[in-house]
Length: 222
Image (cartoon, rainbow, N blue to C red; front, side, top):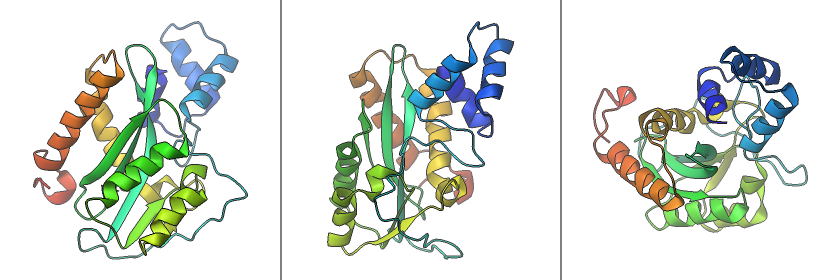
């Protein structure tokens, strides 16, 4: 699963067949059905797009994408969120994070062993204790279209924006953060426990927010 996760960051357009061929090329004896099951567990699909950890609920209302051609020129104008798979030495957890589009600042984050909506709500509530955005962008996953999540945004008079279906580029900044945290922390460490992972992610995000030089910001700290 870790190999699949690493390869996915390099080639998100690989489907089950190519991922199977990739593992076989490394000498792993694994059938294609097993590869398909592992990718589903991880929430990964081949895309022109992104992982599908947050599955859509057809009964939930979907909101339009508000960020197209929008000039984002100040902090707390737009926040966005997503979920990613985090491999450990044994097993895995999921990471949810909220990013400010202007500053690239990670406003809040949480880890969980499930994809329950409460995991995402906790991240949102933690962020709103610090500040609130004018627009909040998500994908169309059921966690984000659920009434409990949407109602929090509405009660805070926050405009709701949602990616077009299958368009990872609509939420590109959080995707870039996933790549950074995985290559700069997750893949460099064999984490044994949830507490150890929490501590490591906390240290990395403090570094990311306060020390890391960002190319998109002309190598300035946040």
